[in-house]
Length: 282
Image 1 (cartoon, helix red, strand yellow):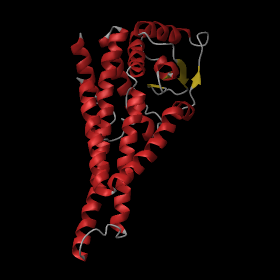
Image 2 (spheres, one colour):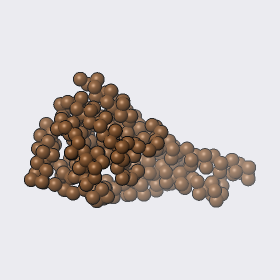
Image 3 (cartoon, helix red, strand yellow):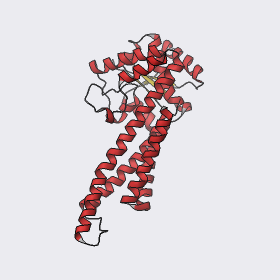
Image 4 (cartoon, one colour):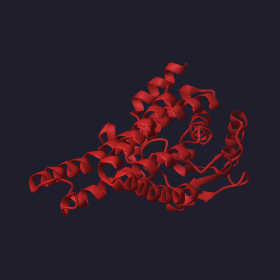
């Protein structure tokens, strides 16, 4: 069901791009914005893993340096049929984790010191299973595609905003028609990015549900993952992580959850619903 929902949302985002492109810049404007956005996100897709690991000062560890962590990941990758990812520890007492990398052969899993020291072995397996499910489902690639299309829509919206402000619309037969067209363009420039953002966030939430289900199956214990999510959510409120909004979607629970966010603009589904679905798997 989550895969079907993701597909529908991707189709909706693509149709939004085509409509906005035809309304604002025609075919040429749409192609230009798409190419620029694709170039930016291609760079992000290939190098964002290194950038985000550096941002959080993550340190790569070996089996000798963190044997329990290594053994759990090795066990789970064998179950999931995945190659071993690179393993990192983030030096913070906050509790969270994320996976990154452009494909399963270039994947990395990062966990915080606080999480390693606070969760039981079964709970840790659930969290790592969730992250490996993201790797197996190629969610980093999906995120890059979504970001490319959404980025193109936002570029087109910026073009429309400048055209409306500086009178570049100019397609009407008289001044009143031009003014009406300018207002329409400005209205579109405001609504289109909001619609793209809402779809982008909805796709992110659907991938989290899918990773919960896949992670519980890999680890073999949905209840342990449910318990871990509750603990991580509580910890995010008590000891929020110093995280950036642009990378918040990577983490298993929103590191910014201690702050106020409308659910439709959130990259993560409500923890209560995630826990409910996991417990229903039992």
